[in-house]
Amino acid sequence: MSEPATHATPATVLVIEDEAPIRKFLRAALEGQGYATVETVTGRDGLTQAVMRVPDLILLDLGLPDMDGFEILRRIREWSGLPIIVLTARGQDGDKVRALDAGADDYVTKPFSMPELLARMRAALRHHARAGSGEGGSVIEIDRLRIDLAGRRATVDGAEIQLTPTEYRLIATLARHAGRVLSF
Image (cartoon, rainbow, N blue to C red; front, top):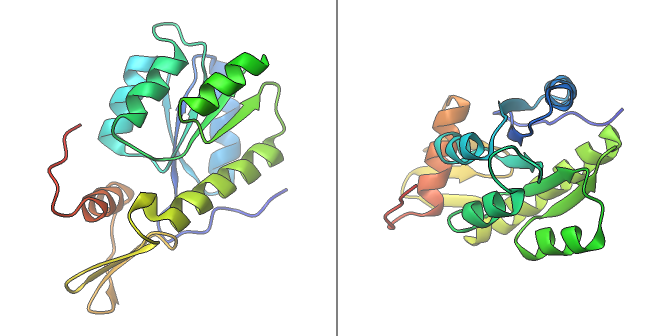
C-alpha cells in the first residue's frame, strides 16, 4: 500500500476525532504503518494531549462536540509549529481557506483515501523535519548531544541513546528551544 514510517522512534500521531468508527479505522491503518497513535474525542482533551504528549503530527476534525476545530488550531499555533492535517467532512472552499490560513499544514476531506492521507502525513513530517521546526535544520547539536530530527535519533559522543517516544519528544522539544523558558 505505502511505505511504513521508518524511524528509530515511531512517529506519534494525535487523532482528535469524535466519530468512533473513523478513530478505529485510523488507529488500525496508522499502527499498521508503524505510527503510534493517541486518540481523543473532544477538543479540550485534544489540546491537553497535544501539550502533554507533544505528538509528531495531529489529525484534526473540525466538527467536535465541545469546541470548534478552528479554535483548537488557533490555540495550538500559539505555541507549536508541529504538523496539523485537518481531516473533516467540511468540503467548502471557505473552510479550507480558513483552516489553511489559521495554520493547518494540509486539509483532507472525508471520505478520504488512506494511501493519500499517509502520503500527505509523510510529506508534512518531512517538511517539518527539514525546517527543523523553524530552528535552523534537522540536526541539533548542544555540547556532546546530537539530535537528528529527521532520523529521530539522539546520540552523546556518537553513541546512540535509547529513548522512549516520550523521552525523545521531550529532549527534542527542549533542544529546539534551548535557552528559552517553555510553558504549556
